[in-house]
Length: 163
Image 1 (cartoon, rainbow, N blue to C red):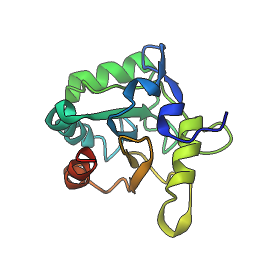
Image 2: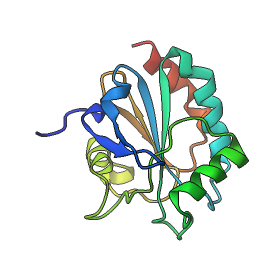
Image 3: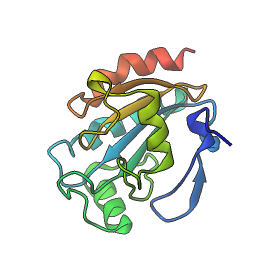
Image 4: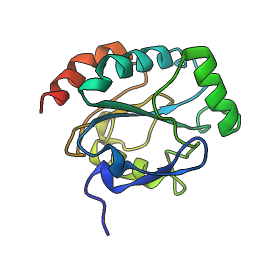
């Protein structure tokens, strides 16, 4: 089967449980590759604020820790979960650590990058906190660079929630 929407994928939760993304079908998703020791790590606060603000309207933020960039998320999944909850009050779903580039990239990330390449058409994720906004239909609406602060995405989220 060839994936045609984000809901066609499955990931492991940060506690190691299989999570079909089909469970989020009909919701708007903001999918983010995260890291606990990055200059962008404070974005967890903004991501949690977006989740709290728009969850009831249909938004789910999903974090995918990755240790690919500067080894900025070296901890175990348990350590990452504790860090996110203790330091930023993260209540949105966090998945198990994944690769986002290369042959070992999680299939969801392979698909996301193909659907919305980055600057100048490059598919590779360049750094932590690259974000993908996925509509209720499972299609990628937009890709955001790590420097794009969560609060700057709010208008796009509001538009996606209306469709």
